[in-house]
Image (cartoon, rainbow, N blue to C red; front, top):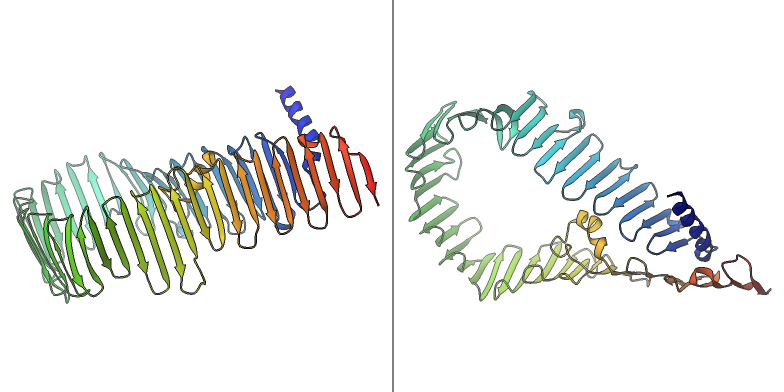
Length: 479
């Protein structure tokens, strides 16, 4: 091991002078072992080892480190925000002032923060363990299905259970529901509220002036009167699946042979809609809500600011959003096989965002004047807005990528910097490892190296130097 480290240090010492430049920015490479770059003017440093596998970056006080695809961490001391990802999406931990959260495949969640910092202090190992520290009611713990209690979970103020489904009790806005052998027996109690259920035979519940509910032979017959204490009371009648009706001052809905034949009249949004049968054929008539659907041949439907069109579903789809300050259009072929997205803002000139993906070949985007093309692109077309996917997985198969802006600056990389080039103003640098490298800096001349310094030529305004065999001195001429 020590002999290997010594050889590596000797190679770095041998090749580094061949690429270090007498200027602000420096580049040292030994493909694919390492790639080290600095830009002091931007307070930026980066180090990549073993191609895309190990990465380290520093810009100002922000730092990032990745061992792809197993681990990635970023921190910003100024904002006191940091995150760590372990084989994403398996584990993710995020920390910010007063809060710290840990999640495992969205099934396990643990809030590590403090209540004083606004944290909910929750721990979840779904569907077995639920624990936390409620701000008002204190600590709670539940181990499903054996027993326990929990607060503010599953849209309930309080849940208690023992040997589920043998016994359970929930509390929501003053309504207490007790379940025995859930879902067979239930009793509802509250202020001016009562109910009983013997499922699936019969169930009834009512709250004076608020609601009345009745079902017989669930799910065949339902009769509901809801929101009686509002200006929009609702009446529902279900004889499932033959006939369903929803009636209120704002809306009428009727269904025959659920879910196939439907009628809807929305008086607030002023439109009528017919399905015959759903989801193949639909007609919508209204000012802001209108359209036709005849799948799989054609569909053109507008819902307020959004419009969707299908041609030979699921082959080709067009999605439009035309809001007051925001416009978006997206073309899609076979869902994510091909996608073309354009976004504009009313307060901005030109296109704000453009993204084109052709799975799995490439993804191109242009955001605020900066363009980026990369190939291969395997996961990004499927999860286009997922930043953890982009930093943990996508670099592993990006055999070619290029970035450029409207000022003419550009960066190109092939096979994780086997060939790379950078252009900024009059400055230019490129390398094809290990054959040749070229640097040109404005006001500083040129630096050309063959085989990492076996033959090297440097020139500036005062002199020219030709050196051989990695020696730091050579033949000099000029002033």
